[in-house]
Length: 380
Image (tube, rainbow, N blue to C red; front, side):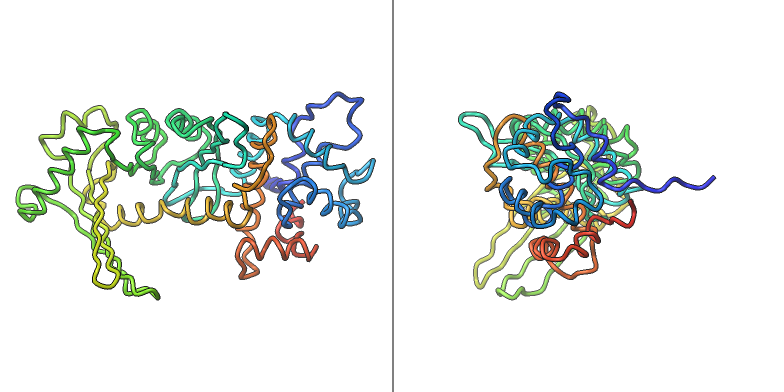
């Protein structure tokens, strides 16, 4: 039996339910979503620019959209995005991401980002927790939360959406929670969780134990060590990162017992030298990786975690100017944020042009053929 063709992103958008009454539907919802997506890919950052983009390419859009009343106005885009059920749009996004990502391997980094421009009065800004595949350089899923502290409840919801069997999940100290560790192990994955003073007793105990062990050369316990040294940068900065991994020490077994799957604790010492000034920072981690896996694997996981900041959050801030966006009403901030992430995923999948995200967006706005390549319209 032949495998059915993979649905394109535009096909998936057609599954989003229309929240409007039938008598008010002068423009097809798929048309509105598709124009918005293409405009965001092509450099539009607010509704007026979305309309200008649509009008400039109306003949092209007419080749595959209905456009019963032409290009919608900016008021129509704003109103419809305020009404669209965000959960339905995010579910559509997740289904599409699963079809694109296929079998995920390697490190899955989970981290949150606030959309600061979406703050409305005293309300907290929109905060989104994302899962990022470091190996594939792509978004795997996202869940909204009202404020930073709620990442603890959002991460389990995000994990339910992902197929992470065989992966290493990395989360910073905010997500270093017993319930989250349990969810990761039950999903068939391993974890490397940042340990800070939100677990004060355990963190201080681990830090004290590493201090003593470094002083005596790990005389009482087997360990794995890995040194990652970088040469001088263009600014004359020299950085080294040393990693030590040990099995959970005997005197910490009781404190470690509630942590499902916990096998090792780790320390990373980052040393930076700029001229004659030397600074050192120590970080600690809880991990389900066995000692036999080695410190180098943990080092790669810790290093890969920053890809969610460098490749996702930085791209949204710089390439899409997300924090400057003033869309604030009702569901519109979350829905537009979802569209941005779909646009970013499509742009990152396009490897034909050696351009940054801003350069790709400009090219997609200028060149319809390149926009079709980004959209992968040959798969429709």
